Amino acid sequence: MKTNLLITAIIMIFISSCNVTNVTIPENAMAIIPAPLSMTIQKGNFLFSEKCRIVVSALDDDTKVAAETLALLIKNPTGMEIPVIEGTKAGRGSVFMTLDTAVKNNEGYTLRITPKKIIVRARTAAGLFYAVQTIRQLLPPDVEKESVIEGIQLSLPACDIVDEPAFTYRGMHLDVCRHMFPVEEIKKYIDMLAMHKMNTFHWHLTDDQGWRIEIKKLPELTKTGAYRKETVVGHARNKPNIFDGEAYGGFYTQEQIREIIDYAGSKFITVIPEIEMPGHSLAALASYPDIACTKGPFEVGTTWGVFSDVLCAGKEETFTFIQDVLTEVIDLFPGKYIHIGGDECPKIRWEKCPLCQKRIKDEGLADENELQSYFIRRIESFVTSKGKKIIGWDEILEGGLAPEATVMSWRGTEGGIAAARQKHDVIMTPTSFAYLDYYQTEPAGQPLAIGGYVPLEKVYSFNPLPEELTAEERKYILGVQGNVWTEYISTPEYLEYMAFPRAFAIAETGWTPDRLKDFDDFLARLEVLKTRYEALNLNYFKGEYRDTRKTANP
Ligand code: TNX
Image (cartoon, rainbow, N blue to C red; front, side):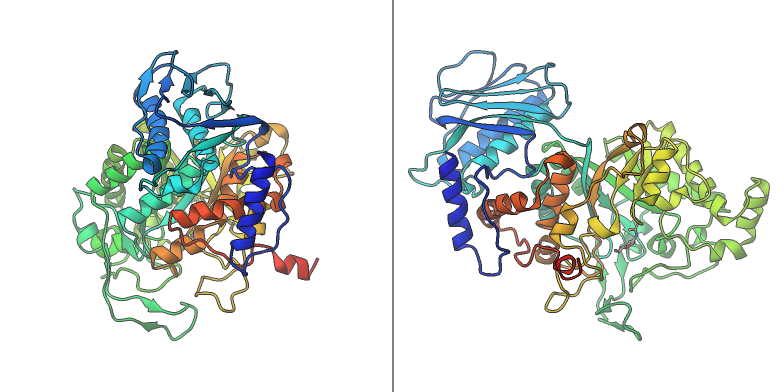
């Protein structure tokens, strides 16, 4: 089997486009991303046949989802309907999925494939689902096509895999405010996360340039706040700005949002909604100007950047407004986190606003930074009262952290280090490794992007555990996330081009322990998986994956 994989890998490289980075295939190249903890190849193959049953030790809603995911993978190309049954017994050629507390990691699994049967053990249904994703990557790419292929035989190499994630949080973010994407595209994005064992989709739903979530109590948010009159053309830093003169906008209804949450849930992915405050709020101010410090009127943003008009921290109406929004958001999203933004909030309106200044005085706050902390703390206590937790960008450290807040470290890892030292949970998402809106290769010849340079190799090289932290402090690092801001990403095709394969490197960073990561090996596995991405019609980037600037200036 080793030789077969090796040959497949070599053939794949041979037929792939000439633009591809040169890689040598290591002997053990089983093309699984993220790489499993351990894997031993055994003799022979397992063949899926009509006799196959998927036998689950305890059939509840979640284990059923995991088992049916496998049944569907087999059904798509073969047309065979493999029954999912509860129990412990079945004939030769069956798959046994067992919930087993001997597997210590909540998302871990063991997978034994022999010529006679497949045995999957996991502590939870999520672990069973991840084992299915491993099986998926070992099956031929034809399983992705959703159409029956005459005479196809689905076989798997006999092997033993023991696997578990290094981190509990493995996420991808998507900004739908600067540009929106159809529900179907968001599902495709979620599919790619699930296939690579990620468990979180961070959905950035409100910003200056558009409010994208229906809030029934506040209809102006989607009537006014969801539309901008035009959009800047080219890079926003090219002054004077030129505009396209075309209205842009839209929003997701609560029904569509539920559809996406359920879809993600069926792939063991939690959706974290982000509602930005107190900055990045022009769309809200355009809808409800009374929650600003000054009179307005305000317009939904038409260019990119940071705007001076923000939510007023002095007015009680502001807090009523946010609580009304969050009440509906909390009802919709079943996960434990609500992301409240907190980034890039200029303080110049607050400095001049009598109500904000009164608040500073009344609350005994030192300055506007502490006013921002007051704001976030108040929101946190509301969110906590509803049984949820907040996440905020690292600016929420300035002026003091809210007691239970989780910090998303984006301006480098410093914010994350400071938060972990204060015993707060941290998610690492630093610009220089995890901003997938930045160029992934030399900008010349590339479609317009925001700037920067974050090639695949750079993304892959990230270690979320900072050396500066003690072992005790490192426990607060929950994991890693890639961010896709969409100022310059306006189509599904371009979204896929920017996000993939860099998101797969994020997935491996979240799953595979740092000591087992190897970029050349990752590239070799990526080459093999490319036929699968082709079958899925994924417009992933196919250019230079290495960090050539690093090579140029060692
Ligand atoms: C900074 S990251 C922002 C976003 C921009 C992004 C562009 C963060 C918390 N704020 O509003 O879209 O840079 O890379």
